[in-house]
Amino acid sequence: MWDFSVTNAFRLMAATTPFLLFRAMVYFGIAVAYVLATGVGAGVGYGIGGFAGPDDQAGYAIWGGGIGFSLTAGVLYFLREYILYTVKAAHIAVLVEKMDGRPLPEGRGQVAYGASVVRERFAQASVLFAVDQLVKGVIRAITGLVQGILSFLPIPGLDNIARILRAFLNVAVGFIDEVILAHAIRTRSDNAWASAREALVLYGQNHKAMLKNAAFLAVIVYGLSFLVFLVMLAPAAAVVYLMPGAWSAGGMIFALLFAWAVKAALIEPFAITCMMQVFFKVTEGQVPDPAWDAKLEQMSGKFRELKDKAVGAMGGRPAGGQQGPGAAGHEGAL
Image 1 (cartoon, rainbow, N blue to C red):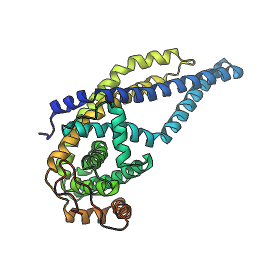
Image 2 (image 1 turned 120 degrees about the horizontal axis):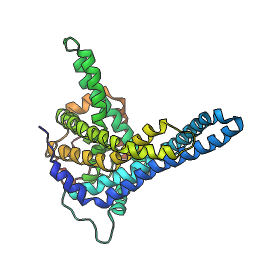
Image 3 (image 1 turned 30 degrees about the horizontal axis):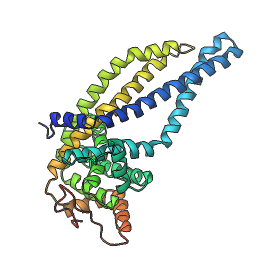
Image 4 (image 1 turned 90 degrees about the vertical axis):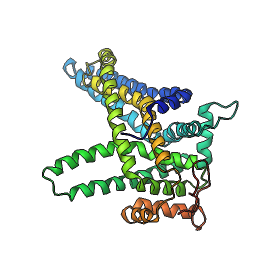
């Protein structure tokens, strides 16, 4: 049915417990920041509304809470590169070591070690973020190819099915860009652009298996997230009750925030671990197919940009990755 082992995924998750705790601290910290900023904003708005009259205080509280929420969102938008660099990619680095059975260096914590590995592969957070954005663009092009094939099938009512599938695929491929980053770490590549390019070609030539497994995981992840959301409605309602002005919309928003924190801290790492298993399994011993390389270059401007950066990083020479465990036959294939 699927190509990953849930048991192994839980084993790897348990082996990286320090990182899971770090993720929980980061993402629940973000959720709390949203709640506090919204609460302070609602309080300030409620106070200002007192000058306008009791009837207007609730409206001012809603505006104040919205402004506090939006300001927090703006700050976190500028911190997204740092979060990707220090949390997501660093956790992937530790997962790769655990999957390959390599012990971590003595006297170093998982968080510090993962961050050091990411710095070796991606000198700056901006580089990793740029690679990640290009990878997402190429993955969207591959997904679009699958959607495009459906649109040509002469089946009544297929348009509605295609729209549902399109939304579902967009959710499913959200796990894959981090798997592409895992390839760069696993192969010990000194050219992040070339490694991402190689991994995307491997993904393209195995897209059916990857999308099938991503679809199963999307159902699991969002089913679990919905259950967490239902559980979080009660504490979210309690928080809203303490806010001035009966900020009723906050109950739903805060429940979503708390559910997102659980999803980002615990559920998404499970899905990514499963997808890493699938990618390493289906691509084992493969070399990138030149036909898929050409196809991606034709269909995606992001892929062409990635190739240009890969060649540029090698001073104009053809880009190739360094060999690492599980990367036999990859070097120089492109």
